[in-house]
Amino acid sequence: MSQSDTADPVVSFDAITAKRVGWIRRYLRQHPVFVAVGTSAVYLFLSLLSFVPAAYISDFNPVGVLLLMLAVGVALLWRNRAPMSVLVIVFVLDCAGMVLAGNDASYSGAGMIIALYSVGTNYSGKRSIPLAVLAAAFQLLLLLVIGYPGTSGLVFEDGTTVDDYGGQALFLGVAGGLLATVYLTAAIIGLNVRNSRIHEAELNHWASQVSRLAQVQERKPHRPGDA
Image (cartoon, rainbow, N blue to C red; front, top):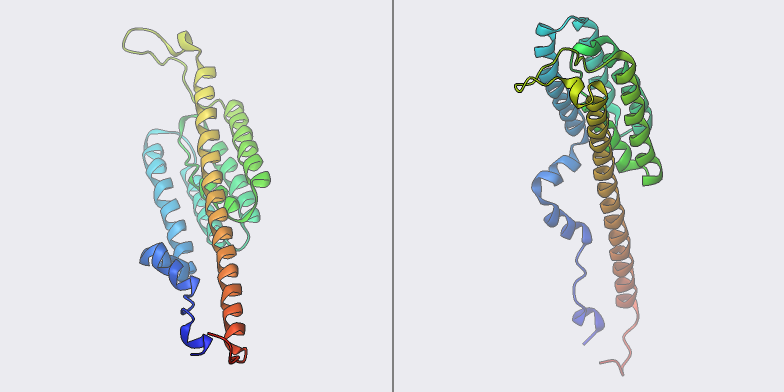
């Protein structure tokens, strides 16, 4: 009996991966345009959740802020093709939006979260983590400059004021910690996805090498003394 008759069939690692990831992730991988458009749509939806109430109760330029949000949504369409460039664009637009919204309006940072996640999926932690920290630090400084949040005169139920608990410094500290945590989380999740993809590619390469070796063994001439 020849070796080709007794050899176990080589299973494609792509087939194994396809079964492991499930049909939803498989569909998303096969339709990157749908993912890009869907991501931008989700960003715009999340941004409008904070924009609409602020437009009614705050005194700021709603048209300018809305245009900046739309520009961020358009930029995110290219987040996988040019993640670093998109991050820079989204960061600049987000900072401009914070200035336009002022200290009485809420401006969503969902665009930065998505952009940092995309950078994490394409670059090492040596780049993505420092970028997340620097972005959070700069935007916190910007919040300090524009006077956000406006906390003067805020009184709690027990009669104490914000100033009794540290005033604006307390709110800025909480906002800074929250901002850094969210940005770092987005970058770290992106890094985990990147590492998973690299591991999957290595396994694919290993499976391809095994398949080639198996084919070479099958092509070898059968010797009479072989079992």
